[in-house]
Image 1 (cartoon, rainbow, N blue to C red):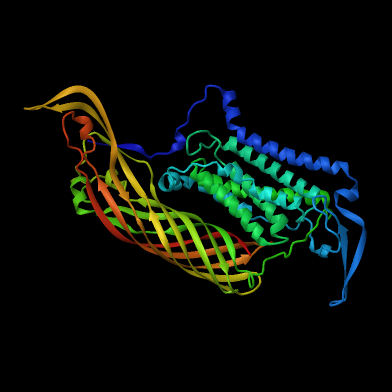
Image 2: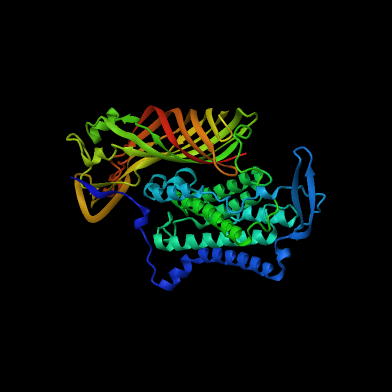
Amino acid sequence: MLILKHSTIYHPNKICQPYTNIAAKALYCSHGGIRRLVLAALLFFFAIGIAAKGEHAQYINVQTDSVFITNEANDSTTFAPMQSDSLGDMSANTRAPYRLDKIKVGRGITFVGIPLVIAGIFGKSERHRVYYLHNDFSPKFKTSVDDYLQFAPAALATGLKFFGLPGKSANVRYLTSSGFSFFIMAAFVNSIKYTANQMRPDNSTRNSFPSGHTATAFVAATILHKEYGTTISPLYSIAGYGAATATGIMRMLNNRHWMSDVFCGAGIGIMSTELGYLVSDMLFKDKGLIRPDKEEMVDLRTRPSFFSIRVGGVLGQQKLTMPESFKQILGQHQLLMQFGTASTVGVEAAYFFTPHIGFGTSWQLVGHHVKRLDKVFKEPSPTANFPSNTVFSFPRTGINELCASAGLYLSLPFSQRWAMGGKLTVGRNSIKDITVTANKAGIMAAVGPKDTYYSFRPYSASWDFLTIHGNKALLLGTGLWCTMAYKQNYCWRAYVDFNYSRNKFTATLDPHGWIKQAYTSTKQGDESISETIKKNMVQIGAGTVFSISF
């Protein structure tokens, strides 16, 4: 007799370790949130304390004396106030003049974090597709680097100011903007964490959504971007957002967060910084600004190089045919399984040697949905030969794939704001496995010299009944995209990709895994069946990109 579970999808969120002490639970769960709130409060009150000590002309770092610099080329006069910074004085002779009318108070706010928040919210229902990211690709990964890396971009920005390199804001304005940014982020993250009540992947606590580490890292990265990336070099932005992205990835590899937690945390971090700087704009107006943005919008005709975070979907309908040797157990089904749609996330970067030609690389994780596999067990064939009294379950409903590629990148700009692009890449993919588990219980028996007798001791056997494992293969790819410059160095991009690989799948069927538990004196139970299936994997993907051009 075949017994099938009503709920075939195992979800770790249903496992929760109860707390007998409510106060202990609150203290344990809120430790990370308290740390971020304390950090934000210290920064904020430190800034306010400095501001309270000085006169009006001191806290905006503007002296009463000024000079007029005449530009003979266009016969215009530029007003350049002489400024000094307490973390690194610069004389009027060494500081480059700038136009104050280039600094548009309050108009630099962007909304690039909102799509990341939306992706995190809608991605909560898809998180089971990438649940096994940790076990599939780095089961032994464990590091505390992410605990410190989250603060690295902010530490770099503060260090640059300390050693005399002025950024966008004077010291007091910088500390105020940073303090408000961290404070707003901590308020958002902690209020959502204990409202969403989402269990972590490792089943430790119910404060997974969103990721506080990732939110902190993206606040720090956006501060570095605003202070130095938009005023001196976009390479500061690349360094900051690269460190923030690495923090989010390590949170997933440490099995502490779902991918949806990381995306939502990143978006909250960016938008919190935008709000923090907006508050400073309203408080300080045009005072305390040292460097203007180099440009309001990146020119895609001369700066097509980019670093991007990709989110999209993949269409795939490849089918794995049922091996003939499996039909004596699984019955007369034509298909073993079929790949369905997939969710994909990743990072991509390219450096262009000329305005049109460059070299780039792409790393992405694809979470394939698997169809038809459960039909073999839910709708068994009349010729199927399953072990009696067996319960089948499906720990996962998909297969993970990791793709890494590099190659030629092309850019065709239409204007300063619009450009088309394409690529030809080669790389490798690694497709992991999917398993159907079986559970069987009964009365233990022994095989004697003449017959079989029962010991009346119960047994319970659990084993992998069917496993389908992918491999590593050569990956060929191409793609097209359309880029629109947004504000500062930010860009939006929509893409279409085409990837091809020829992968080998090893299917292993073990119908007798229970025998060693059921019989005390038998060596049987190792008779598994393995078959190799080769398949051309063709993937068409599309999605959107959050990008920084440089």
